Length: 238
Image (cartoon, helix red, strand yellow):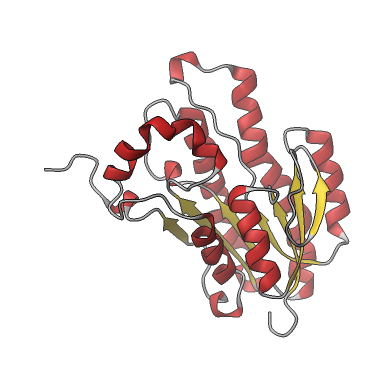
């Protein structure tokens, strides 16, 4: 993937980590299309209104993407759901799985063959450290992110010989609107992170940018935590 970077599709690119990814990739020379649900933002790229919770809307997006010439796909869109396992609402749980997992698989299915036909491509999922270790009250969100990880590791084996890489970025706590509701607990949470702070969205975006670069051509099936050492730490400290 040398020369002109090509065209990339980013889901959830209107704000937070997604907006930082869009800016990072545009600065690196990518032609960026990105989906949004609640406002396109004011960054670079072409904004596409699409609610990934709507299966018909995802199908339409995937069909349009087939012939769009995408050389890369970044699934960043995600919704959270905090509820004890015994209290889970099935409808809300299915929405989380649709956005975090099924939308990703549907779009990936549409793009993999064009990528292999073109001689290569990049697929990146922005998941979560929740996929690596369970957390109380986080069963459905963690399950959706873990499902994406299992899918991606399998996909990486299936498409590696065709020049397509598939990798998983696992952020920890990131300073975005999604975590604004935990403001009262921020100091306590930061004390549990070895780095002592939340990540900046740009720090996650930089890892995504690397995975889409020529330098990452031999990196596939990988999980890259961007969590300040959180996933490396023991749950119980002396």
